[in-house]
Length: 176
Ligand SMILES: [Zn+2]
Image (cartoon, rainbow, N blue to C red):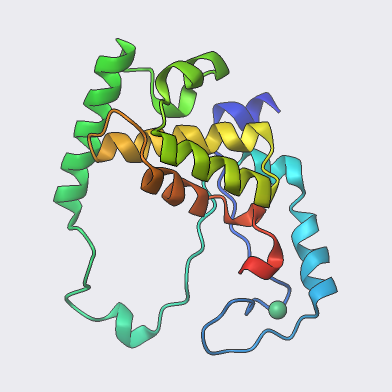
């Protein structure tokens, strides 16, 4: 348990037994029950401890080889944004070692200030997806980072919306 907390947990998983659930062109061969059983293997407490769940869509070889991928920032721009976001956190917490991911419950309440619209939105999705308290805290910490990347002191609705997307393993199956 303590090991899980100290090190970021990385875990790769197929969406279902056959691997094609949610695939844009190939049909999934699994029944609803099979998918449910497969997902249950990644039980709640484990899913809870993973900060970011990211769906990686399948990439066609020809797309992979394309030179100019639209909407993607170049790595230098990303690096600059990350450095800036880290500086914002260093200033806020008074230490380069303290980062959003390590905020404790009390600190989350203090530093993760949401605009009213963001608060309403989070309440609605928390209700819908039955997020655990641990999961909600992760969403708040992730949205704090997204807001920092945009240099926004207040967490806005779209920051929460993005953070919620990184908890996809908690979405009910029929939402996919
Ligand atoms: Zn399948």
